[in-house]
Length: 177
Image (cartoon, rainbow, N blue to C red):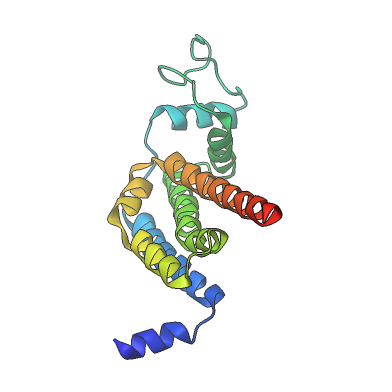
C-alpha cells in the first residue's frame, strides 16, 4: 500500500486523470464491442434512423414517418446518433460505434472529477477516489450496453455545468472578500 501511495503521489494530476479515463474507457469499449450485436429498436433509434434517411426530426403524431409512439426527446443526442447512423449503414456497426461513443462520454465523466474537485477546492485524493469509484462502477457499463447512452451524455453536461457554477461561485466569493 505505501508503494501505491508513493506511485500516486509521484504522478501529476493530468496523469492520474488519464489513468482514470483509460480505466473507465478500455474495459467498456472492449466488452461493448465484443458483446453488443446491434442497435435496439427503441424510440431514439427510430428517430435517428428517420433523420439519417432524410425524413427529419419526426413529429410524434406523424403518419408518414415511423418513429415510434412519440418523438418528444431533445434533438441533440438524436442528431448525434443520426450522424452515426448516416456514416454506418448496418445495425451492428451502428450499435458498436454508439457503445464506443458512450464509453468515451463515461470516461470523460469519470476523469472530470479532477477538474470538478479543483473547482470546489477539494484535494486531488478526493478526485482520485471519486474518479476510480465511478470508473469501476458496473452500472455505467450496463448503461452503455443497454443503449441508454443519453444518460451518460447528460451526466457529462451536468458535470460541466457544476464545474462552471463552482468556478463562478469561487470567483464571486473572492471578489467580495
